[in-house]
Image 1 (cartoon, helix red, strand yellow):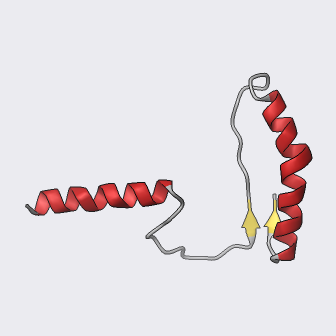
Image 2 (image 1 turned 90 degrees about the horizontal axis):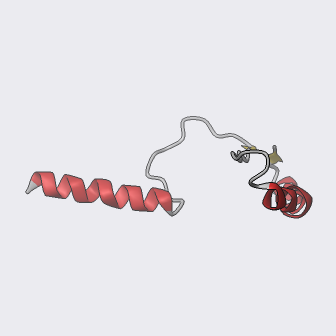
Image 3 (image 1 turned 120 degrees about the vertical axis):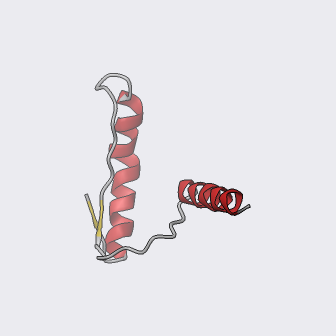
Length: 71
């Protein structure tokens, strides 16, 4: 029974983490937001250009308003 309860708890934490919720505390807070995109140079051209030209400038402005540095 204890093993099943532990497995259920782990599964719950994984689902929550994938949804953007974390149960772990952060030791040090940061005011930096970094976006990391990984792809080959040619397979993500249109999406990457759209992010850099449209989404990232808006996100950078939003971060500045919140006192956060966007990289």
